[in-house]
Image 1 (tube, rainbow, N blue to C red):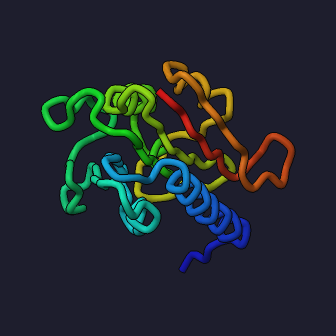
Image 2: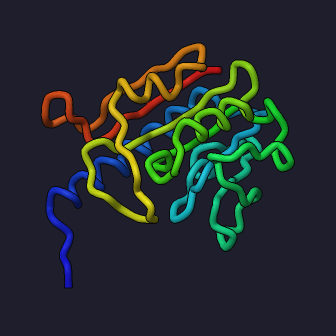
Image 3: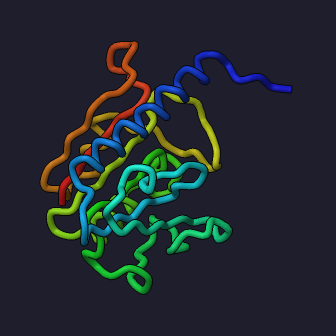
Length: 176
């Protein structure tokens, strides 16, 4: 039986804390009546529902057994399911590394966000390969800026930095 390395467990705790803090902060800023939130692949946790109490929350997941509102691949144009500029907030935590084409995912999120809408995103950097597989990518701050270059403003914060230029996670707000 394989055991979890202490570094992996510590980094997982940092990532979970970062996700919780980031979604909580986003809810403080953006939760409100008539706000449409799309939570992408909330999977095994409460996701936005634990923090957004006034907004209309919908979910999207690639897994047909997920019971998400939309069963779709965020790397594809899903115009038949979701119209352009539908959502005020899109939450995508620890998802981008699992996509096969992160540029297409960023473009699809941009398409479905309203003008002035916000992407709330976290991505691991200093963390092991993990499920659900595939786990394809790690993004530096520079790569995230390229991925999100269409957005009007992009604010990226390092989280869990114990080594210079090697944070455990990046927490991002990107405004369309």
